[in-house]
Amino acid sequence: MGAFFLLRLNDHIQYLNRIKATLNGTGDFRGGSHHDCKLGKWMDGAGPAEAAEAGPAAKAVFDSLAEPHQQFHEASAKALELSLAGQASEAEAEMTAMHTLSGVLVDRLLELDRLSGAAK
Image (cartoon, rainbow, N blue to C red; front, side, top):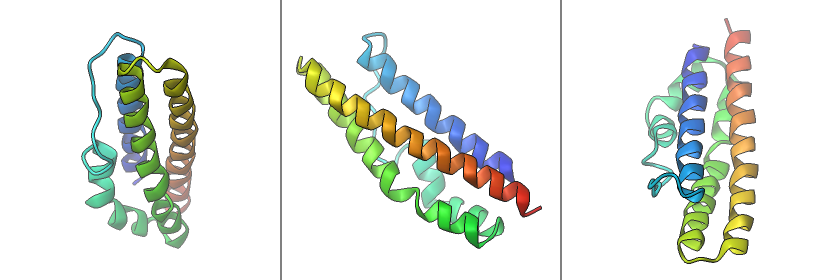
């Protein structure tokens, strides 16, 4: 079961790395909505059932992913927009928010993995 949550963690980290590469001038990834990334597709698809299988605590953690996930995408899109507009200090502020929200997502996905292991 936990492999599902670790795969989603990996999906998020890969998305973050692609955004960072673009912000650093070594990529051309423009991101997408919180429904279009792999994590979002999982959250909109099989995620609720997989979290529920791990128990009520895991379902509660899963439910708490939606808001920071959407905010992460909004911050990353804004960082890209500001960076492309040459507004470096403003882009930096959005990058800080993006990294903070990424940390929240990582922590919650790791908690889902932990809870799924405890449910076995």
